[in-house]
Length: 248
Image 1 (tube, helix red, strand yellow):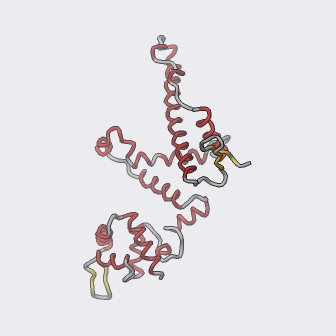
Image 2 (image 1 turned 90 degrees about the vertical axis):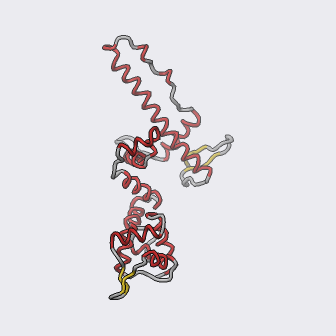
């Protein structure tokens, strides 16, 4: 066992799940009970033991290591330095999809946060900021799913992202409420109710679409500033600002 790798990765995985060594110790004891050292001696100081592990002064037995991995949602091979990602699932998914481990971790977090819907009281406390709750933030997973799977005719691609940025930057895509009729323009409720509904709905769709595209634009822009764009995109500064264009 490489002690340096073990201690670094144990601390990393522990911090993902528990804010402190004491919280980890309490969770371990609650789930698995005391650790037996030898045949008779019982470890009554889990905090000290975890501290010793993270300092590289001692190492857990095979059985205890299995418990640690179950509690920290990681694989023993990662703690032992045999694989580069936290779990074999992430390693395999990375190889299969090409997505970065960080992206896979974010998708997993979204899925986890969607598992339990917040109760009414919890959401009500947030008032107008209800969308900041991790459950509702996780709904981005559905949008990612839709973008990736696309439709029979359209898929998300670099060309689409490039065109999207050009439209936002050059053509100024936005929402103009005056483009749609107001309630006062529809006097005949029976005849024009569907038209009114369509106009109002279209406006809401435009607003949501604008927010989505605006968010994608910000991501592209920030990545450009940090020079994190993939090789498939280049940065052209000839116009005095960042501009994206697909390599030919």
